[in-house]
Image 1: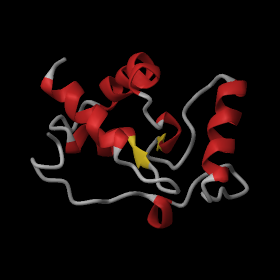
Image 2: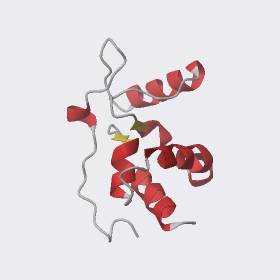
Image 3: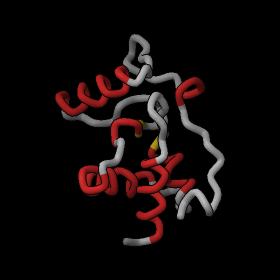
Image 4: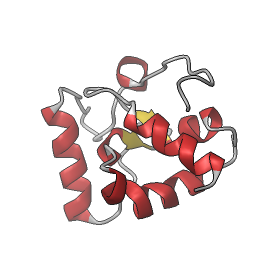
Length: 109
């Protein structure tokens, strides 16, 4: 596994229940500020294998980015079960729910 991929997996594993992170935020923490699309691909291909809490990753607008209605509803439901609230436009208040842990190299090993 590539170092960037390893870091992305570790970051996602550590998002606590009731919190979210954005694709871009994860990419930046993993060392590639322009790697949000890579985070999407990693989530898609490795979530099941590594048991990642994929539902805790949303876009920078605070929205669920999955276009498939069934999967989108599954993600929203999973977040609501953890106490994450959505506004009328189905957006998450990132100021309230974004996980902003200060990561260091020890956390990402």
